[in-house]
Image 1 (cartoon, rainbow, N blue to C red):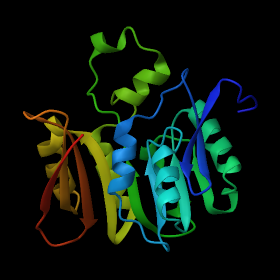
Image 2 (image 1 turned 120 degrees about the horizontal axis):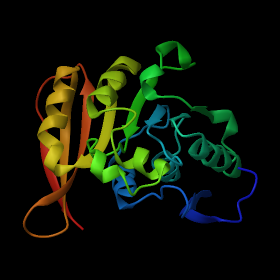
Image 3 (image 1 turned 90 degrees about the horizontal axis):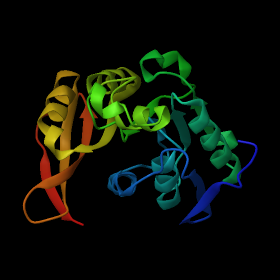
Length: 224
């Protein structure tokens, strides 16, 4: 990303800021809600799938510095933004970007065990009509074009270490599917938070799952 003139700098505090652009997919409140939901230790190595500009990781890092940041993003343009954000925040020695489909990631790609995986994935299943009027970059960010929900959970289970933690934000309407898939791939959901924007129905769900953990979860809610 040679020119940042068209990018807005968002300050997260504690010396951490990120660039974002109106021309690419901008982060939303979903990403911030997930970042605040995370439980990350100083010693953790964290992988963000479907990373976009890396907002969740950078925001989480601003709240509680941790050991290593891995980013996976399929779109080269967004990887350039991540790289610029890494440079701006002086995190080059602690970071690595994987510009590939997440389905191609392997354990051998990582120098250190992955303690935590976080993901704010595309929410919508592919529907040809809904893609007609969207830019390619936006469509990939919103729809399961390159990877499905099952692809993400399956790959997360492969990469994360035993008792490692998996975090995701998704539509509340897909929470049953999300929880079932986690269970199928040995990621036992331990914490569920439903996000409400009105008094009737939850809009979003945040989950924390632990690999090879015992069953049993706490359920929370938040009104925004």
